[in-house]
Image 1: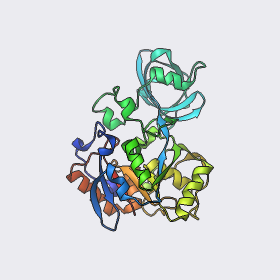
Image 2: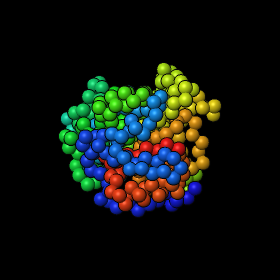
Image 3: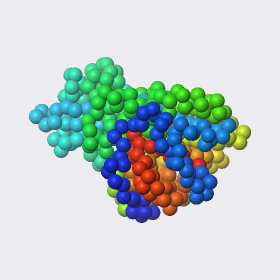
Image 4: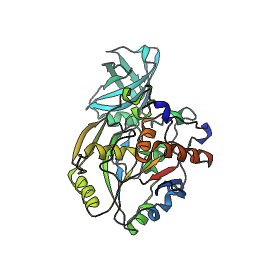
Length: 342
């Protein structure tokens, strides 16, 4: 499909630079019955779902993956985006023309990494020196990797260490938050539980590739980035049991959805899964493992807007986004939510 079909005009003032407070006070656009569109709040979610529904969250934890350093006199920026070994990460490099394979980058707090294996996309593999766990090195030298559309407007500060982490964050390894889950609070989870909804977790370590623009003119020519994910046996069994009992599996975030769909066979049965996924969902895709999605508002021409268009229909999502823009919904990682129930 032509990528231009997924374009729309977004006023820059619609980009949220801070999350709603409290988190569950964010607005939520609900698309459920055919052509039905309702304005609500995230705190209304228990009334929008049914007893027996299962919400699936991504329990990845964002690491301080943004690093600033030097190679000689040249300033080098690095954004880690995928782990390749115990001490080795693939990283996007700023000022990469000043870096060659085999050279060391000296970051803050005496953290040093050697660059190697430059890829076609300009990224390098960085191997960190020493014996300390890389997580400790990043805690010393790194900062939270805010999305580029926020970082271009303001610097990272102390608030982001909490704001850009979900209440489910447990497994370190993401360099971008699973942002739909940022809206959830203990009070909201208690209300969902009281209304008869349950929840489960899986892991997908979100990579910085999620922010890369689609440069191809046709979706068939786009190469999707790979991310590591896992669904254990117990979680797969819960998802299957929910649907067998007549409940719905509601993915919270596109990362949860992509992991579930990667683990689901043509028969609609979710299998345990561990490994990389580069699933690219566009209109025409037949969803096998999920019955709904809660997600934020996405970039024009992005793979994520293509995904929601596949779920609800491209024209319907274009109309929904036009409504959201006209009625001042807040977009992107710190923005408002949508609940999509096909």
